[in-house]
Amino acid sequence: MLDWYKDAIFYEVSVKGFADSNNDGIGDLRGLIGKLDYLRDLGVDVIWMLPIFPSPLRDDGYDVADYTSIHPNFGTLDDFKALLIEAHKRDLRILVELVVNHTSDQHPWFQASRDPQHPEHARYRDWYVWSDTDEPYAETRIIFLDTEPSNWSFDPLRGQYFWHRFFSHQPDLNYDNPEVQKAMMRVVQYWIDLGVDGFRIDAPPYLYEREGTNCENLPETHAYLKRLRAFVDAYAPGTFLLSEANMWPEEVIQYFGDGDEMHMNYHFPLMPRIFMALAKADRAPVLSIMARTPDLPGSCQWGTFLRCHDELTLEMVTPEDRAFMWDFYAPEPRMRLNLGIRRRLAPLLDNDRRRIEVANSILLTLIGSPFIYYGDEIGMGDNIWLNDRDGVRTPMQWDAAPNAGFSDAPAEQLYAPVIDDAIFGYQQVNVAAQRADESSLWRWTRRALRIRKQHPVFGRGTLRFLNPYNSTILAYVRSDGAQTILVFNNLSAESQQVTVDLRAYTGKVPRDLLTDVVWDSIGGTPYTFTLTAYGYCWLAL
Ligand code: NOJ
Ligand code: CA
Image (tube, rainbow, N blue to C red; front, side, top):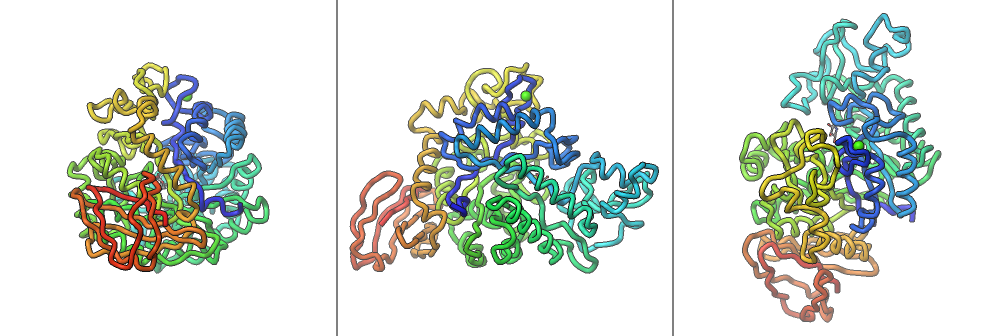
């Protein structure tokens, strides 16, 4: 099917953190290949890999030094080709990162651009955004607030300032230069030729700069992204484009164009509101952002997630809500980073199985296609004492063996220590133990993913909110021509009585997809039932 992504479950993996095949302490492509059966068994359809390209790794690979090769830590191009073959054999799709906006300052393009003595300087001079002063584009916000005082940094060799929306070692490419535009298209072509199924486009809102604007979401940027889409449609129809525009719905909608730009965008503002709704035991935050969420062009889809490799961003909430979220979910200063919270799902939700399940219930049923962050299927913990966002990127916990079964290297050689605290340590939290335990979170996740996939209505159907009087209940109807499913989520720590007007479904007999329990048939009077603390149900009619 052309729009397979509407039914797909996405899994975000840090290759570095997943499995180490050569025991050098760093996860690699061969290690990932060895875990494809695991992912298939879990019920994943698409693997999105964090950057695997040559890089000084000062932003975990989002600082690309070569767009056409593999970082030796992770293996070789042959390993990558093997990964594609093995993944495709198992009906798994592979997405790679396309870091469009910037490169590493170690990229040869930047080296040539900054150095007037460089033999290729004339060719690359205008590949980045240079200025004699640090004054242009003053209305542009700083994203990495904790580390960057300005979007401009001075380069002594060139004697000018260069523009960067992220770290000062990540100079922004100059998209006004047609050579840059072409170069990025060639990168896309290169990975398509190798056989990738699609791209996750990093930080697309920032491609162009214009004085007098905030330099985000500019028409020129959309025009380029549309050209990119036209190129992949013509060159390799079916190539999937996912964009990471961390913006309000009104802005994100533009990244879909008329179905001629990105296939999918993450719904960034929804994510913190799921956590806010749980914290307040009130559905209002979710309802209000969904009321602001426009319908998408028919071929497009939202990507939804609870956690990822970055901090839980609070950029798309009001200052009051941000203060509330920091207070509630990040009481320790060390848990905060930039405008967000650097914690994983299970620790955020107090390792409370009921809260983890209801959050996932919303993720899997509300809208769009879900992304699972590696390790969250077993409720992995984090390490807030590691640098930057490294604390949510620790080695995957496979079993209770040394190094959590991630690597046979000496423990001190691992790229990051495994989690070994009393609650989240690998002795307690690991894949092997949870696979063996019928009541584990892993087993629950696998089952929930299966059920979601058996019912395409979750990825494709319409969404209508039911508004029971009790505002601790987030309730909605997903329906398509073939099926209607009622979903109820109790956001509160107490059991709740729900009374809801279901007269439109009189005569139907609800069946809970998760438990197979058949409920009382719906009559002409209000339908009343009780949901346990953080309980949820997916009722097929
Ligand atoms: C977004 C990525 O998710 C993040 O990890 C990275 O630091 C920035 N883009 C810059 O590439
Ligand atoms: Ca390795």
